[in-house]
Amino acid sequence: MDGIGSEGSEGQVLVIGATNRPHALDAALRRPGRFAKEVEIGVPNAQGRLDVLRKLLRKAPHVLTEAELLQLANNAHGYVGADLKALCSESGLSAFRRVLKKQPNLPDRKVAALVKITLNDFLQGMNDARPSATREVAVDVPSVSWSDVGGLENIKLKLKQAVEWPLKHPESFTRMGMQPPKGVLLYGPPGCSKTMIAKALANESGLNFLAIKGP
View 1 (cartoon, rainbow, N blue to C red):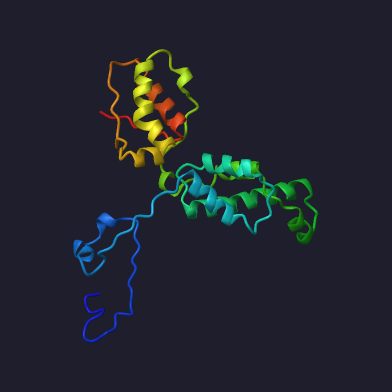
View 2: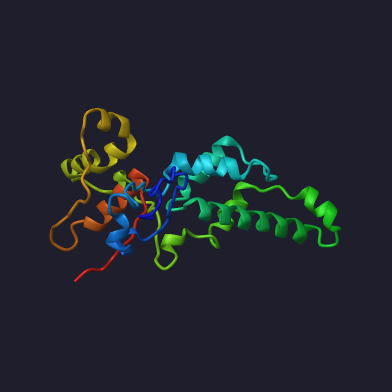
């Protein structure tokens, strides 16, 4: 890379690198003149997942409504583009198996004409095509809501302001120059609803919930 653009070269070679472990790279590669420009491509949000799903399903036979697509995008927490592509494949297989189960003696040509991917096929496919980053751990969005947490109104308001509001109204917070916190520590004696509050916060904010037992 050091020789690109030197000795009279017009610099018509551009090197683009890609990695999922940037911190494992040799620091020399990240010096100015080498990979000086870094662009993070993160995990897509619900709108990003919706856009990816629309593109993946443009040529796929499906009967999903726009509302069902939105529901699917909201449920697919942690899925990146490759995960969503795998999910579409699994959903197609689910639809194929469903048709064959009902009419096992149909010729392939007629089976293909009957295959239409449904929302249930996608929900079934999620059991097999999990997000690549969370396959080794149990991650879910809890069913606990704020209404399940008795009292503690002041605590709930503080958590809404710190976590839920910035996620639901990102443009307003960006316009005001406000940065949400990177983490929140709940402390108190055993049995005071810390875990339930964390689950409710995750659910109401549309976040994944991963419980880790610490020392």
